[in-house]
Length: 239
Image (cartoon, helix red, strand yellow):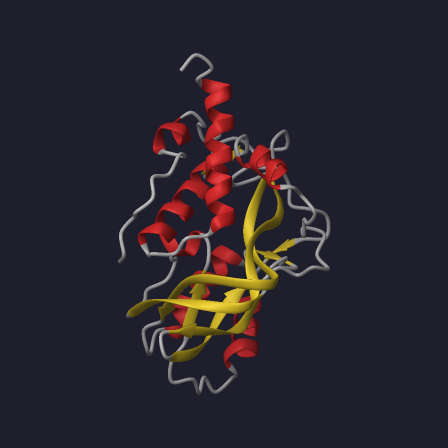
């Protein structure tokens, strides 16, 4: 791990102002046309991704957001890597359940077309691929149809080119959000809070862990500063 060299403006102090919603309160209903994924759905997805014979020698996961700091699966190897043709973007909306509300919905990260993205690769334990993939799908694909279905991408890691599974936005999904300015995104991230926490916490953890891994994302770095600025204005006007 490279260790953090830059000083983030967004800190745990800022995150502490945004208190998670009471998880005991009734959650908003799912969007019209959506349903909870089932074990059969996960099995079908695994067959599509891995094939019925599971012939892969290795199965890697490419993490670009919360999976970096909360993997949701076991792994036996971790390394950084670069995906070309996709970039990290706050383009998955609108979250009014876990990290947002009806009043201030959240906006989550996904991979969107174009550019490039540095992230983290996890190699799943041999012999435990299906069990770990199901845990991953339960977290990332709990509702169908998925707005960011899993797919294979090529990841450059050192002198290796690794095929890995990741989650990319479906631009045809009604949850695909584009065209927002950096200030508009910062406005969203500085206010949205749900039962699992705030978008400020999500941003803070993602940027901090990327920096610790030696990965600097200029867009997210700008966002963390803008979000901290907005939280300070709202909660520390006299500081």
